Image (cartoon, rainbow, N blue to C red; front, side):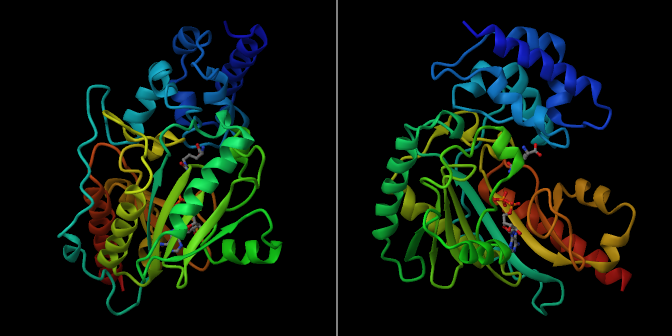
Length: 359
Ligand code: ADP
Ligand code: CIR
């Protein structure tokens, strides 16, 4: 039985979305009255309701997506809302479609040559993927003890990494100086603090408990712990050598996976807190300067057609600075890991060709 106060908040949320002409989120598009009425009385075994799913998008009318899954069961229980959002975001992935089996691109990374051998356009390349530890819910349903236990588990895995390229140190956020935290964020290594989308989703409770970052000496392999997802594995380096970045990430994924089981769904692939990250969970991006192409009025359309997403210099919901954009694959579900990276690779290759033609 869902508390009548919660049902009332859901109904008010629906009305707020509908009344806002400036809101264009997927949540607004697919939370019809019919869907709301069907779902407002449902509760997962862990006690999550439709309010937990929609509250970030209701509080932040400028959301692109607007929903999060408080636990794995939510993707099934609230499917009448999640499914159309997933289909819209991930290039038409239907309720009957299934995530293909994992293909990290072993033996194929050499196909991804340096996109910018002269170093004229690409500043850096980054590929990240998200993982959820099996047996733990997502942020809004985690206790303080859960966070501490998860951090202990992954810390002992990090301590055991022997590979000379990957080994490094775990730095808990609790106890980190504000100076160190700020410079790690400014240099694009660490997640930001106080993300209003995550806060409104109830994802920042007990902060900074159980949160932190692991990285190797060169900061080319990093792991975010308990920010949006349990784990975000990241490989990054200056320049445009996509193959090298992917190869390092794959080595890291295998190293960690051999010691901790991850949540994977037969249809949705690897499970994440945000439905935009399901499936491969892979976002492969470049920080790139394209002065001619990015000045075109149809820059966004060009990127849309190439299945690319444009972000600003400090990640999602930030602006470009000095003409530098973050360009990445948009879809992560319904294709393999290698294909997701290749989508970014092919698209950025095309953008560089267009830039050269315009010079
Ligand atoms: P995520 O990629 O995990 O979805 P964000 O969009 O917030 O999250 O980006 C996280 C951080 O990674 C930001 O500081 C962003 O600037 C940085 N970043 C993303 N792509 C690149 C890149 N190609 N080179 C350097 N930093 C990058
Ligand atoms: C939004 O809807 O704009 C935010 N909730 C972020 C959505 C996708 N981003 C993400 O997974 N980090």
